[in-house]
Image (cartoon, helix red, strand yellow):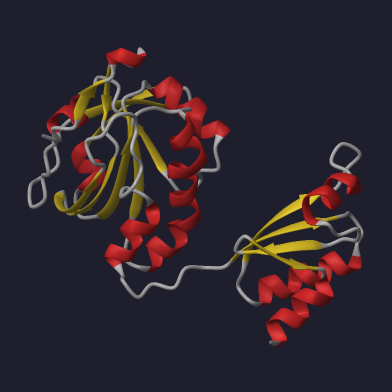
Length: 243
């Protein structure tokens, strides 16, 4: 039975990390004392679910967490500091503090250190998330005890909705553009005016217009998706917002 430690203090441990090429010891008080912290713990850096979904979504929603009283978001994994530092370089995680629980001391103290020797991982953390206020665990979302690596309740959206059930999630857009395109500039300004966070994919000699057309069906720039749904051109984006 995996342990739920709601109402208890987080384990008091030391984490060995490397910052700017130097060894440093980070203790639990430095991470949690007098702060409101969201933690999500996962089986391993560079693993599929962790890299494709768990970490990116927390990073994406970090500004919303901050607006709702969260001082810091911590990602914890039973990996050494070298692995976690390299993973950080590979990910979009500028809003997340990645902490290596190299010896598994924190995970063991949480009662969530599990044996994954069958797949060559050794001892690893079970996947979970928690809300910690001044070192006291207020809420935990522990993945169900199933085969494999379940990912059902420790996601960023579930935690955010616990913190604020009425939270409004931000809009996100993806925009295919071309350097010097005035319609692209017009679309980006409109998105910025609406407070929409967007990712820009700029066409190059390697990422061509043909690729854009195969993805979007459109032949001119920009081509825009909003919250995963196709909108179209800058004119169509303007029409969308005019209703």
